[in-house]
Length: 157
Image (cartoon, rainbow, N blue to C red; front, side, top):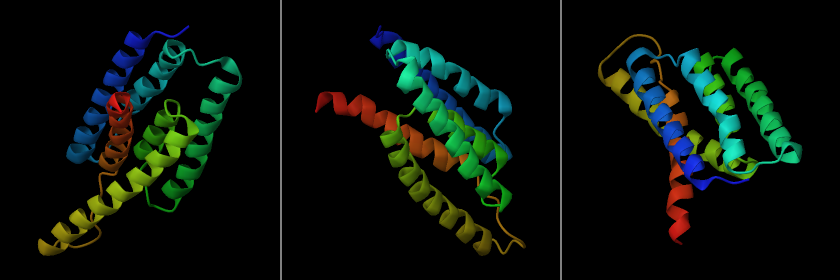
């Protein structure tokens, strides 16, 4: 069963949650567990709304999320990402099919590179000591929002 209107509404809610995550990350350098849990818990409603079957559809989404969590946790342990960033990416993996997830990772990485350059340059120009903190949730949100925008924009192609 597919419910296009509910699916679109859930995608708009996801987009708003991603914007909230980015804004909060810029302000506090944290992404709350509540926000990540909300994104993860909305995914089953999205699956239902698009008619995703339990096998293999839902199983693939869950496996993808677990894989993202495992890989990004390694980045957390070597200090390249924050814990909230890892959980946000894993929650997003519940929403994005594998091909879209690959595109997301590329876009997120590009956005993260630009974001890091901006923060490093501003940190050095201000002559601040130590390493700058990077709100990587912004890059995650940009990558995911770009994927979501493609979903809306490509329907006119």
